[in-house]
Length: 304
Image 1 (cartoon, rainbow, N blue to C red):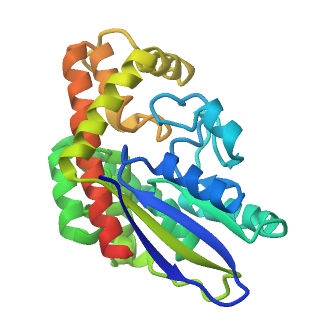
Image 2 (image 1 turned 180 degrees about the vertical axis):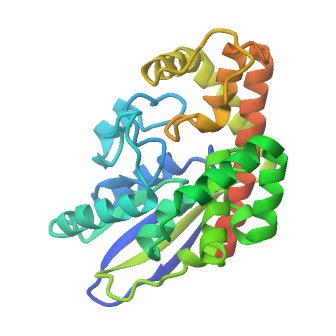
């Protein structure tokens, strides 16, 4: 059963941004296309990995067929070597919306990247600059104590952010620790700026499914990705980034570029390095995807 919950905050004569949210694998893309067809309007992607043109399989980017049905924006426009933040996304999306709203009364935004949606719909405060000394200190502590220590630090410093962050991504965890130490504030405190001069209103549609059904969809989607060539896509991406794909025991995974440091790719890298069998890597992709889906739903329910 597909559950769709709508939230309307509409003012008279305001343009409307329909935001389709939900867990990974729940069916956001299909729902967004339905809504876009209903209003005859385009879609903006709010997915922090679908921005990379070389990762269409592992990020479940809209297919050529789907993009032929509805115009999509901010998909596949960055190379793996480029960095891109939630703040940059918000600025680009605001410029794009200003242009699209000249032609359309409604635009659809869809994606599971919580910080992207937050940045555009609620706004972000400026993050503090991180001195090199603090950055190096946190990095050395992580290398000395490991991921478990880093996870405990984030839990202690900012329990709210812990519930939404990719808990297996050391770069994001380290950045949280850095910001907390420099500012003596929680990382999540910098994401609570409300937008007072926005020229459009927001309607949220949260797509949900029963947990067992969602988890089954996630498992089947991972199998489909592998059949579609996810391993080959990952190897090509690693080669572009100069990441070794032969067996090794001394690769520092904390140096993995942000573009590729995501579920689906980092597990396959451990397989290529000889740490895991392919079957284990695939099972870990499924498990980490399920964990991420759970965090996403907790986040959306607390924010909407």
